[in-house]
Image (cartoon, rainbow, N blue to C red; front, side, top):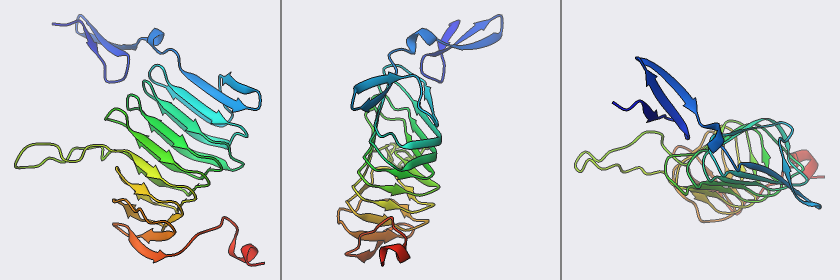
Length: 235
């Protein structure tokens, strides 16, 4: 019987001595992880960013944030092995959010001027997955953007898995309203508005639309949006 076995987490192990199981992680393998702030002085390695709680769970992960830095609060990022995360400059806030990027060689790219008010972005299971969010996007509270279903759907005739994880792409100037779920494999074109409580299960390649419903479908075309309140915009 093997005394040492791989654990469930990256770089973790289980040792059994006389029936007693001990779990530990090899902290020396958790190396070459970086948080980089990019400003007019170039790239600066930081130990922490105010309002941002980073949990490195693997090796060779890089988080690059461009100045002026978004105003983070109550936001967690966790990274697996060989992960790359890029967050563009923004005068807005990113708060009450959880970004879990655990797939090997995965990437999360958030463009400039993002405003994120409570999103859960999860990238896991297959290698080389990504979530890409364009410039000038507004993401409201309780939005789920997941590259996986978390469980496996199986063809009963062939016994093969039929719901593989897949990357997600959100275009520029998109507004994702509250309580929206964006499923694996979805791509949204520029200037898409997703109505509250929608479940987006397919891609939309047409710009300047409003989509909504379960599952989401086009409900209005030839639209755009502004972050200004209605009364202020009309002045």
